[in-house]
Image 1 (cartoon, rainbow, N blue to C red):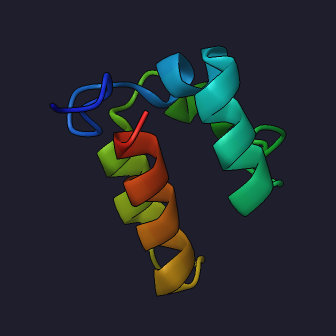
Image 2: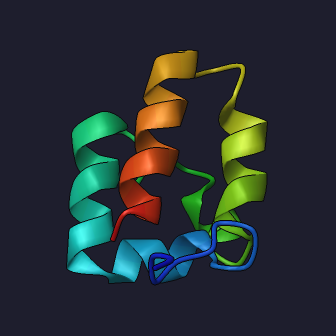
Length: 72
């Protein structure tokens, strides 16, 4: 069974509004919820935000984030 979130269509804002998803984000990328650009990024699909952040985060962190959010 697929998880409740499809990172291609779920926005970053939706993930940050979900306590479980937010907990994963805070654990792996603690600076993200308070980042100055988060207001702009909240309306974007999470996959697009992760792609933009790809050069700023270690590849294993990105993979953990994708895997754990998809498992929700």
